[in-house]
Length: 418
Image 1 (cartoon, helix red, strand yellow):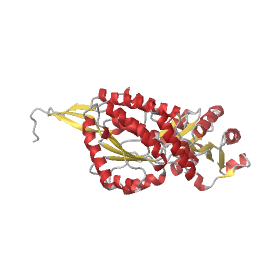
Image 2: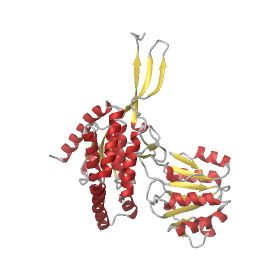
Image 3: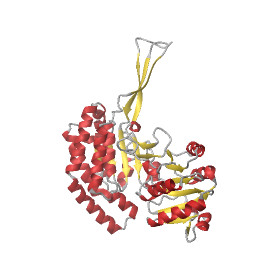
Image 4: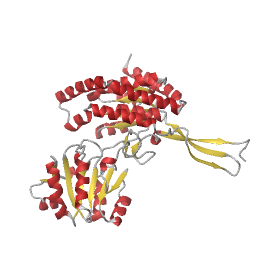
């Protein structure tokens, strides 16, 4: 059977499964999630063995360090996957909830009710945990999902997928509500993007090239999870100790993820006191600093920043640093170079904080906290499909509610329109 025909059959089966899943009770979906989590833990050894195969191939192919870090699984990461899946079972089911209800003067009762989107295609790179997170989120929100992972994680994704499907089948839900297509054939993505008869939404997660290719070629609506060029701005009235802790965490704790800080902005009023301290701390943690002219004047020996370094998603221990003039200068820089993901201010000045939070137009804006909190689990959502940088329908960590739409349910008693 041709690849096109195989993908068409998979998408069609997902559509049929989505209808059954939309009728499933919260109790049945929660039972499936609990079973999926158990199977992940039961298959930890198999998943680790599969991941080692992917890591050997990654080393042979010379994959970038950041991609290898995202690809790597440990027992702790698999346990966290299972915890995230299980946590969703404890959350309220969004399907069937009523957003609003009102009665018109003619007696019609109108309700806006949450419903699943239908079938969602997820196209992603590197991270095997996305397989579990997306499958679980889609199932809980009543959506079927078609997964298309990258070749670099093929063995890991297949092992996770096998465990998840076993849990779904054991709970009595249609296994086609979670499907995976061949990661090896590059034509598979193109074919999937043409399945507008069966798919209702596509979400790409990966590098800029992947996302642009999906947006340009899809017949199916797309929600973009674009690159994370995240900033921390240290204001002139910042507490230096607090600023150092936040900045080091935002850059160093896990540099290869989309909510890590990529550029540090420092108010000119505090630059001479703060920059030598933070540069020393960053260097002690292995971070390469690329500074503007003002930064290099204060901290000699700093590598010059190129214009392209601002707006760059390094996904590595590299940090661009720029001295700016106050909140206005920081907001202007972020407007020009940011990606609308996550940006933070560190300050003890409430008016500066309010201005920053109001002026910076990103999915998540922070005052005196690390950008690393932009995460569905950290927000209390259980897990996330990704971080949407779009402004329509879903923005920021995309979890259960963002995976639903709504319909209007209108109840009358014989009314007709004049």
